[in-house]
Image 1 (cartoon, rainbow, N blue to C red):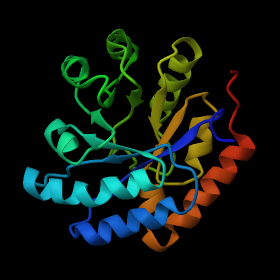
Image 2 (cartoon, helix red, strand yellow):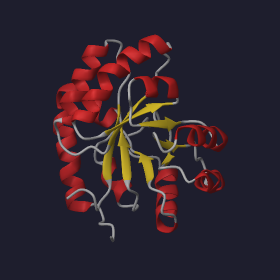
Image 3 (cartoon, rainbow, N blue to C red):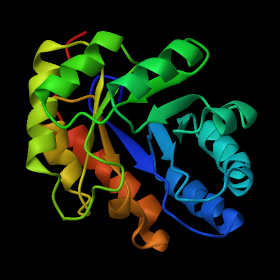
Image 4 (tube, one colour):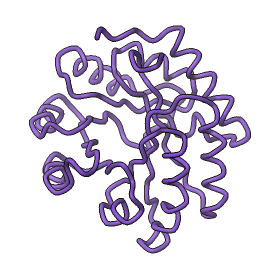
Length: 215
């Protein structure tokens, strides 16, 4: 039962070949429970990005996860993604939320401190994100983001997602703060052949150590 504990979110890595990229993601998703998958554009032009997303989104949805396209609502709509992950500030998030809710899940925001987080909270997005989606530059999750997640989830009902680090075990540290979701990128995809095993391991560690939410 994963619904009552912190769940895993994956961030698709930057790979030029769309077929290779979707196969890599498919393998990772075989490893176990994943709540959603964030699909960044990584500087691709819209046409190329759409081709990537057309392959990735069905793979995500077949695994029972939500496909969240970063910052490109046009592509998100065309490929029938489940949602839009907004990496910009509260004003950008508010604009996208107003345009695309309830058709799409809309969340994110670039909440660098409590003040920005509360601005984002006023919008009532589907979730708030602490960290940057390419912020996994160290083995451990950024302590500031974990602290913000702990503060947020202790008092606000909007679900919270925190960026983990390059070490898969950083997921447990994030979960222990009480947040609903932990996002991993390099921790899962640094060695694609190990991605499924790492997803399995992270889920097992979360089953064992993550705090349970009260219903």
